[in-house]
Image 1: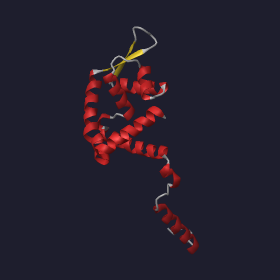
Image 2: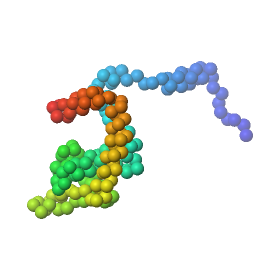
Image 3: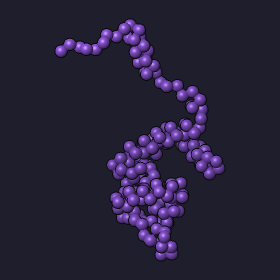
Image 4: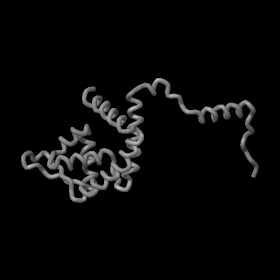
Length: 168
């Protein structure tokens, strides 16, 4: 069978080579690299990627892990309090809870004081999964961050991020 491809002219060949060369060079960030919001978001994406890798056997997202931690530290709190503490919108939080509940990691119980409200509790399985997750997060994820930043850098970064979160 004959090749029906059209021959490439020299000019077209040079143009294709220039495009290929441009694609191998990194895109210049320009002013983006000086914008705190952009750099914070890039760092967050990398941190979340590492977190997901570390807890992959448990299939937990950072948000799910945060909910489990808060439920462990605050048993019997209602879902509005937990969602507000984490800054998660109600519809997103309900979906997140549905996912945790379907895995038998937490349970919702109607509040005796307010029948419209649900009290959240970790199940036995939830406590066990959280214990495993905490070990993985501390021994792998946080250890990598601590190694990267050093103790002083870690404390300084925590202080700066806390200041932004509380005062901005």
